[in-house]
Image (cartoon, rainbow, N blue to C red; front, side, top):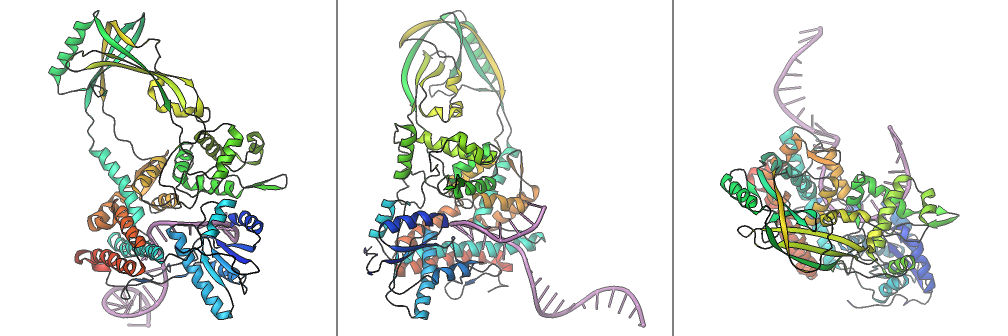
Length: 587
DNA sequence: CAGTGAGCGAGCTTCCGCTTGACTT
């Protein structure tokens, strides 16, 4: 990309356009310190979209989308346009991602039309990529101004039109088939529903088997220690109900070993636990769900924290932007962590967050928690604490522990006795996340003081435990969001919406934080998958993303061709004869 | 003459992803 200079005009007049209005004050201060006479304005997200009440895609004209102003956006755009003057640099700094590029495209078009209409002179429009709202972040953005990336815009159109075709062509098939209005299907909601329905079917068809495991009690320095009988891979050895001979054999062998000395090897190691990364939208929703917050509740609380509060006439935005899929922390954030913790450690959490739109969700000021408690309600404070703890933990030191494993020699047919335990001797980040340790069962075991080496211990007794395989567990709000994120279904701004839609349609129910599909939901899901598996199953999103990637990476002409190919392919699936009975009506 | 019903046409639901208010409960 060719780099341009923003201040080519003498008077340094600048109009700086972003998506979120809460950023504008900070940006404005920074731009003024660069000697720009800048006004910073926000689009509040997308300004244009396909119409709600019809398809809005001209299929015969190469799937050309018809974009209209979203409600209230005409006014917002007019307010932006009214600020344009002669000799102005207009910098479009919407988020550096696919959706942001499309927003930039739409606003740029409005600006160009306005300039022509009003016959304005000497106006220069450019696109900036701002990854963080700091002095350096803005400076870097202004030093590398470019043009709108048309291929990326085309890829956003492809995403939008795919979703529209799938949603608006398949939903009516449901109205007809189930004789019920308001039913819906879509790339994201139906795939999510299928995850939930699949789990239910797995549970229904699950036949838990009974099995036996073995605990062996060993005398170590007059202490009775319970060992597990395990295979070489350190998996608990199980004998299933129908293997009676095997059970008898193991029992016999173990009985013979009572009162006998057996050779054990003790191994001690110094190990550590790495902190968790700071929160992003998905993990915030997951952690809050464990405290009983629905995903949409969490988001509305986070919105309030983001907008902030007044403390003694001074305004404090309490957290960074809460819709993000990055765990990157800006320099500013690292400085903040340093100022609170004194000594910090930078951990490496993820590679893919080089050019993300927003950083991790973190606190923004070093405010006294007790003071803050007076300004926030209980719910707000709980969410704030989650964000606070995960942020500081991420810059704290690893927790350190003594790890010990005691392992017997080959006891019976390649089976061994294992005893693993651990003892924390340096808390590190666990001071912020004390519950995290519950994920490690070894800390619930007594830690025995033994040096490395070979020992003889006497076997005292053994127990045979009869157990049943446990049923797979249904999704919770927390785990369904995790699964959606892992499979790439949906985006941070939509996890909560998707779950709400499934609830509204009566496809799912949530009881005590457990998600159940309704009978109706199962029927709808089965019906949809039997007809439109290619478009509505879980892996379609990954397919779509790879196609969108191709579009993004191509030049404009190829991108247009790929756009047409992709949508034709999708449309042909929708049209295929046995499914298309309703489709011929429109278009 | 009153009630019934065939036939026709108009109007309606729906997707995913960006952003906040402006609403109601």
